[in-house]
Length: 229
Image (cartoon, rainbow, N blue to C red; front, side, top):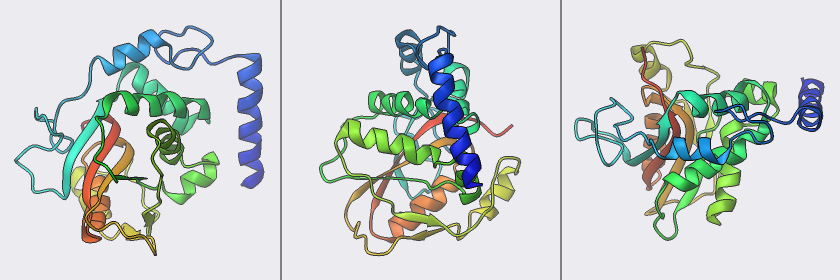
């Protein structure tokens, strides 16, 4: 599997030289997301509840008792944003991580002093397949943009993926999904938890609940909202 990861990386580098990335929105060659398409994405932010889609200013509406205090989402999973995420997740285009981090930087407000940045860890099988944790890579670039340290606070205990699961199954699957990393004190801190796509919010809720149990106030930021059909 390690040889496959090296091969994927080499192929990506060769393709960047021989055939530079076209824009994920308009197809213009030379950049994986051009400035015009970036503007279109940030000009249409998602302003709904990440758990039900209802309009709210805070990312979580009052209809839900949630461990998440604030939530921010770049946009709905469609168009250029969807293509950019898909390239990073499924087509080994690590170059997509930088503009995705930049989108986070454009959409998110200033964070409280002393905030801690972390991310929802990806299933290990997917990391081995890609050769990288895609949201971890985005988080790394975002931490550089915001000049704040990135800290791994959670590890996955299960190998379950939720791609085809129903809403009810997702809620059950995430029970005890995460465990805390040792030696990290986040009591009375604001933790910003990054993830890629939110559908039902089950995974984010489970991760946030673990962090709240460690004494933190949890804000989340996701790249895209995708309702479960």
